[in-house]
Image (cartoon, rainbow, N blue to C red):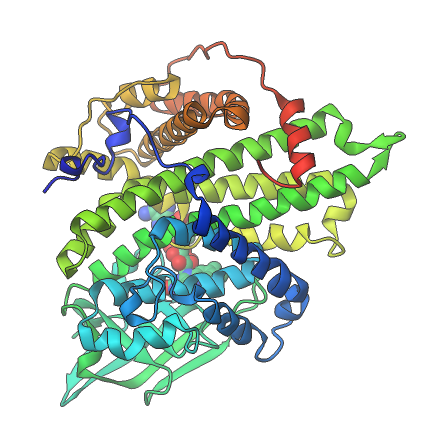
Length: 526
Ligand SMILES: Cc1cc2nc3c(=O)[nH]c(=O)nc-3n(C[C@H](O)[C@H](O)[C@H](O)COP(=O)(O)OP(=O)(O)OC[C@H]3O[C@@H](n4cnc5c(N)ncnc54)[C@H](O)[C@@H]3O)c2cc1C
């Protein structure tokens, strides 16, 4: 059944049709708003006061925080209730994740154990696998990890060389997995390996299985409170029944976990950006130069207005997408095949959210440092840590380059399969450019990247505009500040594709001062 039969847009439909309405975060009300605020209180009360101790990897501290999060139900937030989860929507879970991501190290630890380490099992596990492992993960008693990357297999993920061979009633796994988040604390690893060196498959590997060990911690530039290490499999003995899904179909497990992972990483990226805006706003109000608060200078006001506008655009895209994913699970979910279809449907939107949000995160934390001046370059204030922690968002869950190659290519493939249209809606300046650009056939990677940029900017602009129309007030102000930014970037991408000069449209002057005042009052994005 096509999704449109339920009135929910199909994947990529933003390109060819403007929806009548979209989900916006303003619709999280009542109990949902309460849960989001509990998540923020948890971050502020339990996590932020101990970030230095976390960065020093104090023994047992991170696992104890995960267990506390588990006691509040956060570790199985969108996993089924039958396995100890809260069974919440993916969209609400993502918003909660955003507020649990005010510190990067906690965010990645929590995000992996409640996210990509569990989702493969939830979507593709059989009943006994789910009964055996999910309750331990959803309660926070066990910590999960996701093990795909290897020393020589990163972006080219299907080239893994970890092997699985069947011997009697066991799978014997050999290989090294690299960069495994949570490795030091994990009880369960979702491991990708090739059966007989050929069939890419997924396995549930417990840390205590014979032949499983974890190497030393990587010495990272950020996320120092998280664990990242190699998982070493030396004749590791894995019970036959711990093969997840079908032999040779592990790519469905790995990549669909990543599709949803990219969506969640978007929330995980704007969480620290939100914190950086709040912290630097408080600092700007306090810091005086030339006899007045630096917050009152025009160029500082512009920074805060743009930080808030970029955050707004990312937020508008992410939670619009989350509602679509939930609708897809409602329509298709329940069976393994249906789950697979639901997780794949909005893969382009998930990539657009990932690339846009992580780049916006980078821009926001960079400006936050600038607001602090020299003090931002020291460890005395929280922004230096936020800045270091943020950098990796553009690298993992598929680098932004890999996601850029994917988006435009996927839309074209969908169009060939008949599940998307290449007839662009052109409902804005950027939409018009994207619509013209998609008529250009190209295999050139630089041009393909520019095409993907146009799709991403179209999705960002359309989401921001529809939200502004629906909500008005501060959303309209933020959209007015975002519009010239996105038009400029869209025209840059179009020029890379065509070489044509583009006349930018006239716009209302951006209300920088008004937005900055509101950010100062809230000590955070609007
Ligand atoms: C802190 C941290 C935590 C991580 N956690 C996990 C985890 O829990 N589980 C896990 O499995 N992995 C994890 N990773 C690994 C991460 O997913 C990889 O680092 C990422 O996929 C990139 O792979 P790579 O590092 O080998 O880079 P490479 O693939 O070698 O890429 C290097 C550069 O080349 C570019 N590039 C590569 N191929 C192309 C191409 N075809 N076209 C254009 N450009 C290209 C990339 O975009 C990148 O800029 C983690 C990494 C880090 C740093």
